[in-house]
Length: 360
Ligand SMILES: [Zn+2]
Ligand SMILES: [Zn+2]
Image (cartoon, rainbow, N blue to C red; front, side, top):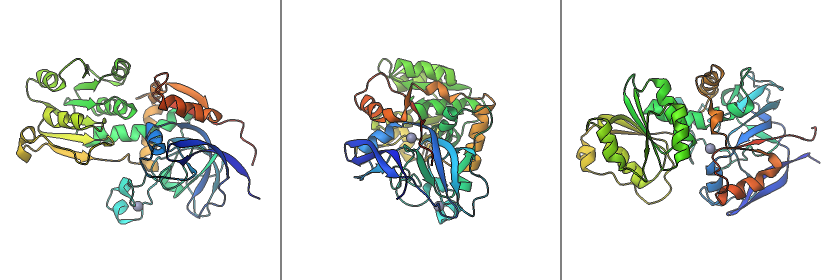
């Protein structure tokens, strides 16, 4: 009989909990099995339980984790058992047409290559399987904690992608709408890329305060201030060069168009939930002629990119662990999701650690 492990799963829409599952064994030739050491909880896990990706039966949740390599396939050369690794949240094949054209995060079909907890078991489990291990795992450098490394698997990658997509150049002006974890990393990315003015927009004072630590120069609380007016005032009526949108709402999307100067770029890194269509305000978009560009992305993965993100942590360019709001043990997962669902204790980014695993 195969050995079992604990896994936190979506049992069906609206129901989640810890169950026993077989430990994954015998990875394919290019794949690996990882023994999980730490994982971050994402609000998208909560949305998945609510049915955002459709109904699932006993699918393991979680997609932002690191661990120790437990087993590798015969063709894997970059990692070996015992290595400390970060596992990218998305796991492209790097062989299909989309991957070959440079859009690896759009590999395959549903939600690009975001497979964990949507079509395959995720990593809220004592062990998990990774396809194409050489390209989807990064070695964690000395001096970088598992906690920090978990951020490189998704949150940093997506936030920084927003800053990269927004065409920030030295001294340019930038605004981030929405200071969720991805928004905080968009602020940090804008700072690292050399923006000269960084405006942070949210309605939560704590999030606004945190964004200052990542490089925001001006904070705007949209409950208290007319965001569009204020941003235009701050930029002498011009608007900003680069806009990053993380909120995924119609109101925020519209404001992005309104505050972008002609020739500027809007990077959408928010997940749009509600409404059948997004509407663009026609006049502020120059009736389609103002060269206001909209780009979209899903967090880019890959071993090389994760290694670069981990280097930024190692050299103290950014400390993502300031976002960790809570620490839990894996056997407390049900409590974590209850707290998130019921909006208890200002959950921002809970870290889960895995201990007391049975020897395999
Ligand atoms: Zn996530
Ligand atoms: Zn692919």
